[in-house]
Image (tube, rainbow, N blue to C red):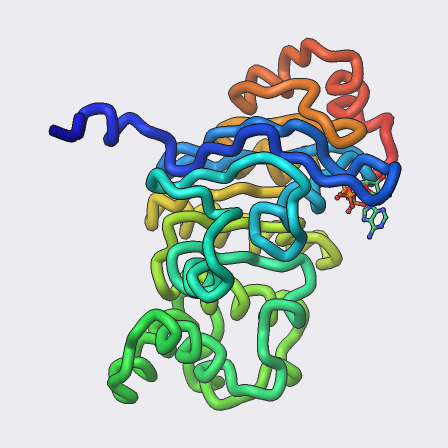
Length: 259
Ligand SMILES: Nc1ncnc2c1ncn2[C@@H]1O[C@H](COP(=O)(O)OP(=O)(O)OP(=O)(O)O)[C@@H](O)[C@H]1O
């Protein structure tokens, strides 16, 4: 008989030994991490520390050289391509730094959200449109703009639309790559507030890559610090930021390192 107690206590995602090189250069090396349901794991490090390589391997945008990424007893890295794509369209979401990488710019705002619902099996046009309108409202976009294309939106609106598109299927896991990067400071603050509310309300598990300590302080429950492709320190966010153990983390926290 299966041990349900154990299953309830199991991490949502278990990553072991994830490694990816670019010829002789290390992208990320032997990364281990667990993500628990409903928690935000922040990954920080200076430019070139391997954050994007790690996230890209998890998302399947990049092939790992070694390691495993286990969800529900299955190694996601070894899924056949169609199953992997299905996972990314339904149970997982990826929020790109640049909204245009995660949106279809020549499709209406409602179409962008509806398309993802349809990939998850929704078929009824009326309810898809209603849900899309609800989601626009949820991310503070006027639902009257449902038929506008993202090209007519500001950068902040585009990012909020990308978030609506990603979250409409209530994914189990959201991978975020610098979700507030490249936006004005005031727009960033509003977006962070919105993200924090959505993460809390939906109980989302998130892996959040950023070089911005302020972003992880606000959003992340736990933190992992990377350097030269390896994890140098990990722990509860407050502990890592307020009492960093590793010299590199101390430098990072005191913002001496370049972004
Ligand atoms: N396509 C590539 N070809 C060769 N080397 C690469 C490539 N992409 C990344 N690298 C190297 O891998 C290492 C990790 O880079 P990565 O982009 O993952 O770091 P990062 O922490 O995400 O940096 P950033 O914050 O600037 O995006 C760096 O040494 C980088 O030069």
